[in-house]
Amino acid sequence: MAGAGAEPPGLQRLPDALISKIAAGEVVERPSSVVKELVENALDAGAGRIEIELENGGRDLISVADDGSGIAAEDASLALERHATSKIASFEDLLEVETLGFRGEALASIAAVSKCELLTARSAGDGHRRVVEGGRLAVDEPVSRPRGTTVTVESLFYNVPARKQFLKRPATELRHALTVAQGYALARPDVTFVLRHAPDAESPVRELLRAQATGVDAAGRLNRIAQLFGEDLVKHLTPLPEARREQGIAGFVGDRETTKGQRLFLFVNGRLLRDRAVLSIYYKAVRDLMKGERPPALFLFLDIPPESVDVNVHPQKAEVRFRDAALLGRVGSALRRGLEAAKGEEPAPLRELGGPVAPPAWTGAGQLRETGAAAAWRRSGAAGEDNREEGAPAPEAPAWAAELAARYGGIQPGPAGKLAEVAYRPEPSRPVRLSGKARESLRLIGQYKGTMILLEGPESLLVVDQHVAHERILYERFRHSLAERQSASQTLLVPRVLELSAAENAALAECSAGLERCGYSVSSFSGGSAAITAIPAVLPDKEAESLVLRIATQVAGGDELPSEEEALSEYLLTQLAASRACRAAVKMHEALSAEKMESLIAELFACEHPYTCPHGRPVVLELTDRDLERRFKRR
Image (cartoon, rainbow, N blue to C red):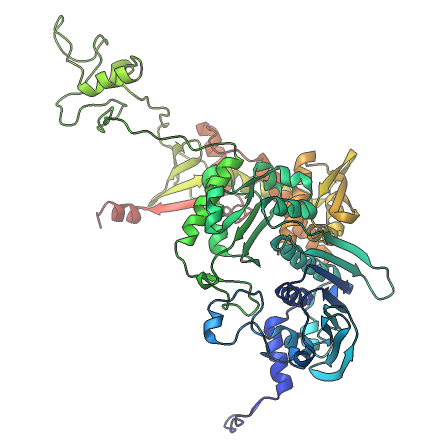
């Protein structure tokens, strides 16, 4: 570092080799980044078959071969240079990109940080071979090969050791590569995908993924889903409304059975994305319609005009921006209709009445009165209704009451003219006995709709979600219990077989050591399935199976696993305790006695972390007196 007062160095132009390595860092993050870029190029070239071969998780070798259009011999020299592309020629083209790749950076970036070989031919027998090592040309010669392109990448990051040290274990890198291949296999069911892997050059190659080409219609997409995830998942999928397909919105949502895993896939014009805006709409629809937090499976395909979406907002093209503000509304409507159909429900038809059958005036005990009337109308003959003299005629019922009776077969309002009774009368306010960690001045008000517990504080109203509060209590109990001893295991008489995708199976293999420590015994089979032969003694069979599936799908979907075995076991123990707590916790819409509410609140505030559940949701919300006064315009 230059000393104080030293002149700063003058500006200088960076060497091309250094520029290429810097640019490569934006595009090539790990072996799966290479697989993604090469597969996209193959699809843009019109490939009908793509074969991927990996060694050591892609750290030593990545090869992607296709039967697409190939590259002309005169263009092969440009193919490995930066910003050489046939897909755009002007800024206007960038606004209407129809291809997966378009910047002309991928091959040059890959070649800058590896030993890269390009074999390509426009017509059978008339090919070209070009080898670049660390950005420098080593071989440039004509060859004979079938039509198509093969790109082979060896020793990724061999000349960038600082980048290479950030690569994960081979099993983790393999899983990321499988996830990419699986995603594009879902996006393009009309293309055959094959992925093979070998731990090293001496070991036999094993086929991990094979998906034969099908159609691009709904049936073809379902067939492709079955190839990757098994037939059982397809039985639990419901198509989105047919009417939305003309607007470019198609796909499938799962029923409650599919909430065991986290299989959420979103494609925009054939590009696999994790768009937060669309997923948040889906999560909200799930909470509203299914009253749960775990989303069912989702396979959503958006085919929209290229000018309606901006794909040039992320170096790795992993995000897009929608220019049509109304699109998300249409997507949300389609998702809601799909979820309703998956539940087996149809929207109830609404019909207009001739006018209101009851005026909107309400008195505290559930009595109705006519707007503007001096006294409440009461049914004739009810004892103790008013203070009229004996023998005096009962007041005439208003017109809306006669209409109500005629419309609904003579139904009359209940005793004393009540159309509704108060279903829950809160207990008198009482102090809540709390531990030393808690606020001793809290008082129990009662329970709201069998879901929330209301507490009165010195300067605020506290609202406690009873389910997540009990979940936090049980989680800390289970977590401490599991951490103190090795989890007991019970062997299953009949193994439980899971149908998994290749990426999920790879994720499960990564977790095997940690799962064994938790009391599981899991064996992976070829073709994606796995068998659970032993489970933790503290879990029921179905719950133990559901937890394994959820972990596999979450990890395959992008959750990073700890690299150290001790940390991995800790992660899995946390998942185990959270699952057990969620299942055992008191449910929503369950009435609790005052004593149970007091006990639950006391235990909650004795927890180490009382304000969030194991999944990160809030347990307690606070509305201060100042906030209430502002709402009522008192401040």
